[in-house]
Each structure stands twice: as C-alpha cells, then as structure tokens.
Image 1 (cartoon, protein in one colour):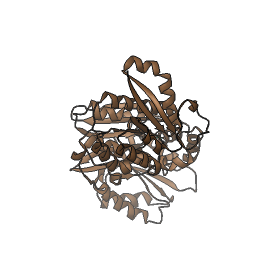
Image 2 (image 1 turned 45 degrees about the vertical axis):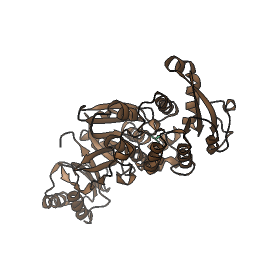
Image 3 (image 1 turned 180 degrees about the vertical axis):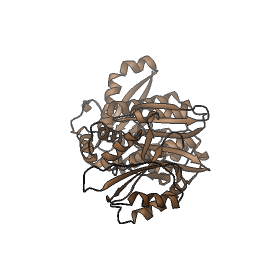
Image 4 (image 1 turned 120 degrees about the vertical axis):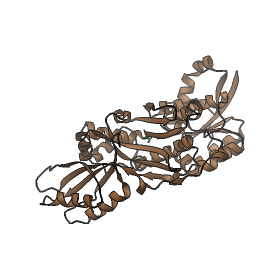
Length: 431
Ligand code: HSE
C-alpha cells in the first residue's frame, strides 16, 4: 500500500465533508486502490468552530503556509479567497513541489493562467473538479473521457442558488426578494456570496474554466459577458411560461468566426431543451461535439458531500497519473482568442416594455421595429391592474443584437415608456 499524505486548508462545509468522507470510506478506498490516504495536517481561520468532524485527531497548523515544511504530497485548498491566502498557498505549494487540489473557481478564473503554467513548470497537478458544478464530474469528462472530441458548444446551469431562486419564483409564485431570502435561510447562499451568485459572476468563473478545457482557450475572465438575474420579475417567468419557455441563468461558450463567445445571462429556453427541466439547486451541462450530438450531465452543483466527492476524485487522479495536463490541452498550446462582439450576435429576443395605457403605443413601437426591419414573432399586452403601467411583451425573430438595441434606445426615449426595457435572449431550438 502506498501512503498518500495530504494537508487540508479550509474546514468549512466542503473541507469538513472531505475529512468525513475519507474517514467513512477508508475501507472502501482500500478495496478499490493501492493507497492509504493520510491527513498530515489541517488548517482553518477558526480552530474552535463547531464542525461535523472531530479535528483533534489531526495536526493543526495556524497557517496553512506551514504545510510546505511537511513532506505532504498534496495540498488541498478549500479556503475560497479569490486572491489572498488561497492564491499564496496554491502558488507556493506548486513552487515547493506539492500537487494542489482546489475548489476555488474565482481564483482559477482570475489567476489560473499563471497558476496552471506554474504547475506545468514544476511538473505537478493543479486539479479542480470541485470548482465547477460541485459533484458533477464535468472536468474529468472533458479532460480525460471525451478528450479527442472537438467541442462545438458547451452550455449549462452552473449556479445552484440562482436556479433555486428562479424555480421558487416559478413554482411558488414568489417575488425575487422573497425567493432570495428563502435561498439564504436554507444556506444555499449567504448575504456575502449572494452578489457573486445573483450577479452571474460565480457562473462566469466556472464558464471561464470550462471554455479553456473545451477550446484550449487561455484563461481570460475578461472574455465573459455577464448578466445576473436581479432584473427578472415574477411576471417575466409567468410570461415566459405562457409563451412555452422557461427562464434559466444559462452559461454558454462557443467559438464563432475564430473568436470566443462566452456568455452568462438569463435566457428563455424552450421546454424541450433538457436544461428547462433542471430545477431547484441542481446544475446541468450540455456538451455538443463533432462526435456527440448532445452529452448531458445533471447533478448536485453544491453542498459539502457532493463537492467532497469531486475533491476525492482528484486525489485518485493524481495517484493514478491519468493526464498531467491540468487543462487537458498542453499549456504552451493554449490559444489567446479575441472576444466575439455581442453586438454582432444574431438571436431571437424576449422584451418587456412597461408603458402608459394610451392610444397608439403599440403602433409606435412596431413602427420603430419596421424601420429597423425587426420581425416580431409574438406580441402580448397584459394589463394587470387599472392605473398601473402596462407590460407589453414581445418576442422577436432572429435579429442582430446591435440593430435591436439601437431601436430599443429610440423606443425608450418615448414618454409613454415608463421603465428600462427588459431584453432577454431566447432559444427556441430553431432559429
Ligand atoms: N454558490 C454556488 C451555487 C455553489 O449556488 O451554485 C458554489 O459554487
């Protein structure tokens, strides 16, 4: 039996669950592999916090940087800071010849370019299965399983909190504010994390990593277009349903005309898109390749146990020596893609225009559309209560985004338009 010595920094939900799973699975691991996993050291901000595990059995380090003075093989970083101690620990561990496992998507999306090069120079693994979609083995699927497929497009729901909020709004007729407070009370997101979740940044961090794995793209977070879900109202969800769609926070990445197009944004998707039936805190990812029309993975995107499952799979990967290119592609062969201009995107759109209830509003709006050659697919006027602004709901056929936005800019200037026009891309599976 080979002994694998690990040190763990960060003992929150995920860190504690990793230790718990390793303890619970000790015999099972011995049935499946030729190694024993020995926890050489642990470290966290607060030693005395109540945890699901008994930490007195393990050697405590006040600073995880002192792990570097031990002969551990793997440093597991579960602190979760975008820079700071997380970054210092990962960087110095790699420099000191340790393999690193992390669940830290923000750190990788922002500093991955440097850190993956460092791992390569030191011939060490920097693994991160837990950083994207919790327990779903999306990283290994792309890196080790469909490695010789050329990915055409990856799209998914990469944030459980926002998916939970949208699901609650739809199923329980809740307002956005009510749904987010339930998500917080259930522990899916905390007030400090909510901005990352709701604002779409957490999904974009994950998409940055996936784009690199799929297309051999240099890790460049600035290549993302990001819109969160805070402008989505219960009415939009209801309107979408009436039109045969669901609103989901979709992250997708593809190469268009040799440029990278990576976008996280609310989107209306048709009911027959498999992502439409992914509800609650679940995550899901659809991959289209030259060899597979659709590979769909769905599962728990967060939570201690699910994320610990991914961390432990990385320990296994290191010692079974599967693929030392941490990003799948050789690090020196990554491509620095230019960002595809969103204004050039052609897509159908959903629009909500809040207007006064006066004669001629509809014909004025459609006359602007006619001038710009924008073709309306459906139009609904849905007065809720008297004396309130009237929502006019429009879906368009495929239109160049720049053309649509220019026309909406004109419409927004009209005195009968009472609020910012809500513009959401739409995927009807046809156009
Ligand atoms: N906050 C994330 C989510 C989980 O809600 O999906 C960790 O990435």
